[in-house]
Length: 141
Image 1 (cartoon, rainbow, N blue to C red):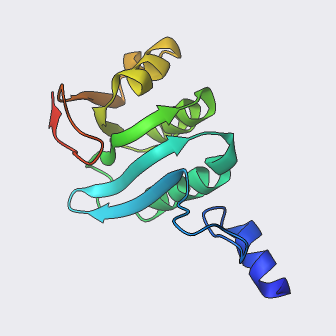
Image 2 (image 1 turned 60 degrees about the horizontal axis):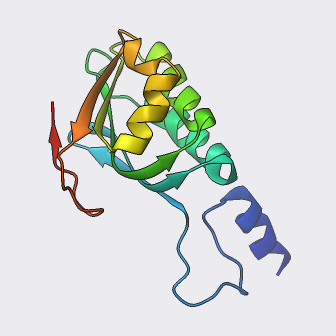
């Protein structure tokens, strides 16, 4: 039981034995290879900020081609708080070729815009295609 508690604390998306059937984390993070980066799905907030920060650090540290921007597919991200936007901005500033934020939903784009991230030269933002479902990742430039 102690080992399970330690794993749960180290991995915020982990669940203990008391979780309800059908439970899923607020934020799912998946690494992508072609193009290289991450796919974020769900809601990014204070409850999963540490996990997201670790994933963003890892994707930068393991970047195979520093001349190519890192793709962060956010088409499935329905909520992002200011701290999440700050993490994405910090990644863009640290990545040699910047970051492509693909598929921004209107609510997420509003947060990015209000914090000035859409003005950073190292961030390329593409919007979600109107009418895209929660499972779709179709984007338009």
